[in-house]
Length: 322
Image 1 (tube, rainbow, N blue to C red):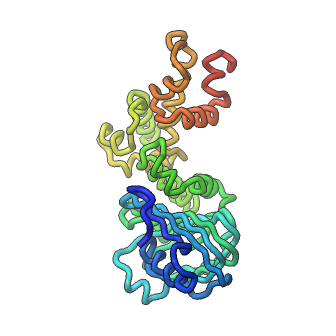
Image 2 (cartoon, rainbow, N blue to C red):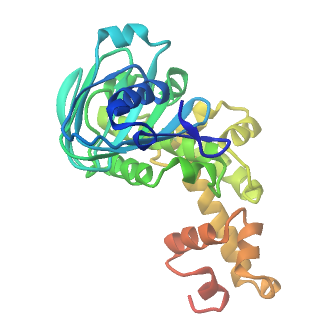
């Protein structure tokens, strides 16, 4: 059993056991945090690895680091598993080989989606650093009507939406999720939306940007303008206001190469800009303006604002952006 870091995060570290027990301990950690599989070979005699995991219900975020080794999940492991799951893995370390339906070289920055109904074999050629997101079947099918279209093939870090997904996942750790300045559902929704956008671009089956989609986008934006100050506002609440399902909301936005998170941040930035430029709010700090615009954390507000507007909130409030 892994050590409890907080009420949310579990950690397994081979440093907690004798060297003679480390491979067995790591096998057990993989099965506990991810799914049934086994270590076949360790390249280094001194095996030191660590797994941190946070469970978010339909999603678990796992960060693993360790030495080069081979790992296998065969049909016996598949038969022992309870229920189907999917595994979105970002390779943050050096290149490694993966056999899952097909066989591929996963470069640093690439992502792969695995289906637990099939076995796999990893050849981790050098010390690894992976962001691993375990996804329930129900969650995946909410975003991907046909998961098989993307399972088993690398999602390149140097592709359009694949690059956006890789950059986003690279920032994720269990500690960040536990202490995030945003509601956790916004982070998980963003993962789903980026994965859906990549898959739509890959398969060419994205719905057309038709007038109904544009009309729905305008209605979504109207709700966001009215409610963006609500700190915990999420896609499900906006969808309920509009009388549609969250799935319809996300798919309609994806058809226009948009995400719910992008539109929400845009609405909050535009509200913050109006307050920063208004003499009526001159006596408020930029942190307070950010809070009133829906940002829970001043540093997050400053980063998001500068990314959108190319000026800091303080520069805009002082009139230096004009």
